[in-house]
Image 1 (cartoon, rainbow, N blue to C red):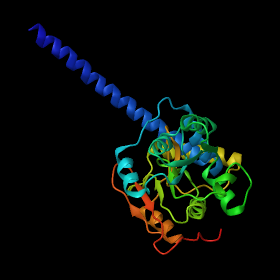
Image 2 (image 1 turned 180 degrees about the vertical axis):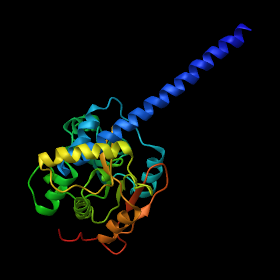
Image 3 (image 1 turned 90 degrees about the vertical axis):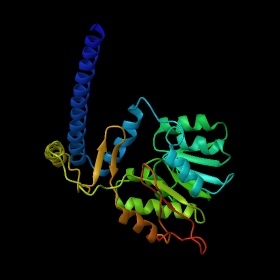
Image 4 (image 1 turned 180 degrees about the horizontal axis):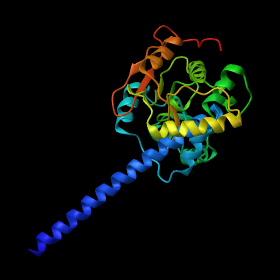
Length: 286
């Protein structure tokens, strides 16, 4: 009898906790949607892009090692070591360290000083790890801008790996084109690997996001933030803003630089733009 009563008590606690957990999750999602709607209207595109690194810096935990889908992807698409691989948005070195351990020669960069410093420490003495962004890389390669990304512009790579989901952090469509143009120039005869969030079929806004946008538009008008981005931006509390891209957009980007788009399977959307079969591809003039 006592055992049965103990079980009923513990089951009641578990049931109550499940309800509380559901309330907390709904409240968190509502707050995230409210904040995302607000920031998407109150900030300009450069400020939205800058939110991501700040959010990453505030995180307490970072995944280490490769995900299963990445293991399968890299095994299938990267050329064997010891070729030279450029790793973009490398963060603290999650992908870069694994590649270096497997015999690849790695050059890496990240927009956050904290991320690039940690990656540099983990890769060890002699590693080339820069603090720069995708947009700055495009300016260095395509426009000849002399800045932190300039050393990359002077190199040629056998493959490029853009860090987990990071292609979606390039919020402006023209900047995504310029980034791929730049990558084709520094990696003319090797594969370019990218991952990103895909747009959902039902992209309707919820009430909290609409409310956040309403408030944000008014502050944005006072701040004169200029034209707004398309609505297909999503805000996540762990990674900031990302552009929700479509399969057609990704395929069109590859076609624009004369490369096939090979879709990978697994838990997260990713593609490879492989080396052209008829000689190096020349990126379109910027």
